[in-house]
Image (cartoon, rainbow, N blue to C red; front, side, top):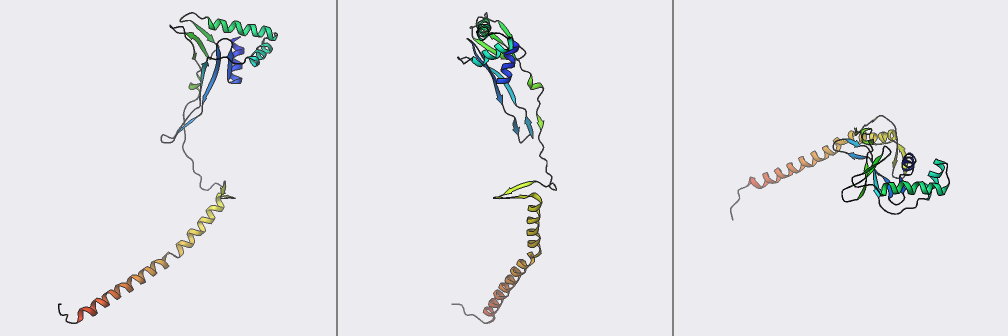
Length: 198
């Protein structure tokens, strides 16, 4: 029975157990750590939710897996659920290789996850790779273009601006020299004569 319930849990990401609740696979997506340049693997954790859930799909699955009628499958599931429900204090019941049900000293029913997927999935280095000479497609505004076309476009603009930079510098130089000459000319004219103090 445990093997059937484990395969149902893995394929449906949840498995209702009559009288107990349901086991749910909680998935945490992969996390990126930009500062350390690491991508952590996705994590999977099994949790026991204590509520009443519809078990018709599970009953049909067990009936097909055990080759019994729906009624017999319901009885098998109810028997398995009562086995878990009436665990003694500090008692455990293994649920395949995925974990185990256990009772604590206060009589609370819990599920301990034994999944060892963490040892198979390790963090990986996430070094950004830049390939400037490779062509790839880009969407610029509403127009689709390639990286080589954009490099040619921006390369042409840079060449034009590099060829004519000296024109602006020459204009600034001429204006500066003219202002300096006018300043000294006015200063020299006003300082030639004797000025009487007021």
